[in-house]
Amino acid sequence: MKPIWIVDDDQSIRFVLEKALLREQLPSRSFTNARDVLAALDEDKAPQVLVSDIRMPGGSGLDLLDKVKAKFPGLPVIIMTAYSDLDSAVSSFQGGAFEYLPKPFDLTKAVELIRRAVEESQREEVVDEGMADTPEMLGQAPAMQDVFRAIGRLSQSNVTVMITGESGSGKELVARALHKHSPRANGPFVAINTAAIPKDLLESELFGHERGAFTGAQTMRRGRFEQADGGTLFLDEIGDMPFDLQTRLLRVLSDGHFYRVGGHSAVKTNVRVIAATHQNLEQRVKEGVFREDLFHRLNVIRLRLPALRERLEDIPMLTRHFLQQSARQLGVEPKRISEAALAWIGNFAFPGNVRQLENMCHWLTVMAPAQVIEPKDLPPEVAVMQAPPVPPVVIGATAAAEPPAVVQVQTDKPDLHKSPDVPAAPAASESGWEQGLDAEASALLATDRTDVWDTLTARFESRLIQAALAATRGRRIDAAQKLGIGRNTITRKIQELGLE
Image (cartoon, one colour):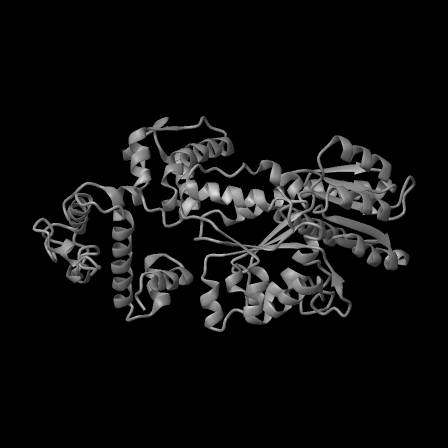
């Protein structure tokens, strides 16, 4: 972790804070004046947190705040002040201060405040460092080339963008690329997943709150819109935003003004909004759970990100990239992957898209026993989906009685199910569904069809979801839990597969 910088001309203050941070295993560095801090910023990277007094020789803490924020907008700055300077400390929030620390201060509370600032610094994603570590997007498939061209066309624009695509397909990476190549590249990039934050806290996360606005609000806090001022705010999973908050978001997008929770003064912000969702927002509008006017406000430019199964030619390159990345993170020698193993990976459905492939490469870096990864080293989910016929495993009367997952689904080509090589309903105890799938795939591959992957995947997913719904008597949430997928995912799949 980067050190915490302490700026104060009072040697006793510096000494007390240094010792307290040392006990908490937080590195620190001290300065006696603002001039030395600015010189250090020119030579070194920004600190994790800056704690500065207001009145010092060689420049005030407020002047230092302005200069630091101009260079590092996302750096949390804590202003220390005597009680007589309270008004100036409060006014410093307009300059972007994270918090003020009145003197004399309670040491335990001071350390707690610094810890909160450290967490904020680690959580808030800022371009000056995060972007440098983010690799350019990878992809040679035509669908990804279309995405790259769109990013290029939007490079000099501040227009609002809506990114759509399945979970794990890399929507945040596209948002980062849009920011990096925009006129706001020197400003902060702040991301928030609106589906991951409880409804009661989301309003405060977005717009901030005043001291005393609610129980536990002991200090004023800037929201994500203020943190992203001059840069880009990425709103992930916008389709899950509560309806009442959609109205407030529409207001900010319309005139750039908002009120903190419990506040009475309008705050103005200059933010470019990029939104993302895996849901069908037009359908959400029809269902009355998403505002139509907000949809049109966000849907100025729409970018669709392809699923990994739509860019299979990119899998080898992505796999090698993630293996290299995992090795760097773990400090080990990168593993190589054989062509046979790549072929197996290329035939996997990857319902979790690029994120699932990345996680698989982390798993292989840790778990594969040799330096060269072979098919036998691949994780269980890949082996199960593609293993050659094996003796069947009877998992219980209910499972055995259930028709096989692939063969029984009706399609627009029913003759495919009448192949003499594929029984209409083989019992699990006779052959197993893997053998049925193998025979069915062989029958389809022997034809002139070019949609074998999509056809079998859709039929497999249909039967799996139908079996889960039958086991839970139609309760989608319970079915999703049994399948190990999210509620939104099973709802979307039901709609896509026509299982309503």
